[in-house]
Image (tube, rainbow, N blue to C red):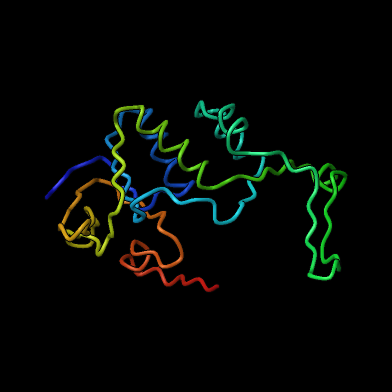
Length: 182
């Protein structure tokens, strides 16, 4: 099965979902390919900078994010078992630094962004897709090849973007030697 788009985004994380929404609002045909067959549940909270909230506002999802997925941080402390405080950051510390961080449920944040992206009618979110390789014409990347449920799939696009995590197929396929560890 072959499909075409203006942009293929491998991975529906916050970055991929924001890009998909922004491109969808511009009328671009975008395929977001997500490895997980179903949206993830919250595995860990993420901290977002205030500028991220402003970006959400510019994209028209800021109020919804603040109501459904994000809370303003008034302070932060990290304790070791046995009540030993390892780190404490107070509201005054945030104020002195000139920042206002937020905590988010990343699964809900991604879900809201992808729902809004799909509402543009220019975005297609494909779940359960494992991207196996990049497609090339000479030195140019022109798409991706992957599988879903044993079926072989190809997407061709003018732009291919990777938001596919620490073991990124896109990064590896481009020869970018960035590896993460636990």
